[in-house]
Image (cartoon, rainbow, N blue to C red; front, side, top):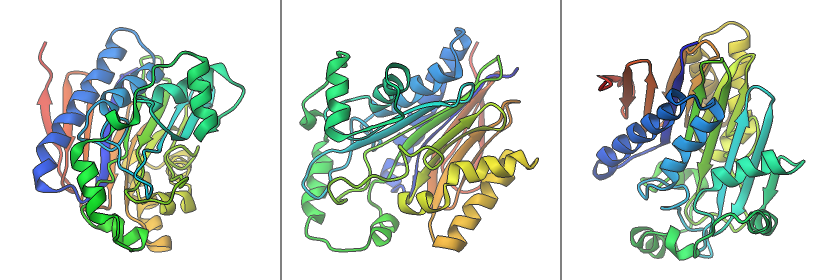
Length: 310
């Protein structure tokens, strides 16, 4: 089976000054995830490694570099899912955890539950000895400044979403040589969101879904819109009807746009190694690695290719 890793760095109006950094970031994360597969790791290991890489990169809004809520605090969400077993773990509204995707995996593997939230998720992290950091270390000076600037700004979430504020949820999907698929998604949410707001990212079937019988998806974009149409599961239902990864993604994003006027982006991989990266926002940084090639893009219709060094 051909092993493939695809990652995204969020679908939004990425400003020009961030364009190079977000593209470099997703390329590095995709290569990181693929190296796990090359060493014999599973799809689950690969998506966790790729998303951890993005959470550690302050260019993105997940883990380090997270945006602040209305109270000026960090609330992080993440999900991971194993297409072989349909096992899934997720966390929402967690603080001071630099790699929420790894906490989500621990929820999947060490508890009977799928989703832990807020204080409970942090207590669980403590109970398993997961490293925590002072919340302040997850926030960049730039974000603190932007938050101060927009603190008094009153607007609907959609107006906020369509502006050039950071909305770069991150995610990864992979298929390993055994044909197992997995997905992971992680985010710091929306700047100035209400305290306790949870978007699509940690919700199974919305921010991500993985099933060996159809494929794996990670979503990004306007969380409330993605939740309303259960976007990840909707894409896989199209694939189950025999449509390609790209067509399934386009149809589902088009439906979300028409039905609830939401914009977003997705990355998809099938158990046979077919993959897609599609979006209806101004830009989305994405990268994919398969066999000897790295593909990446930022603008609509863009698909650059590089041969991997041997």
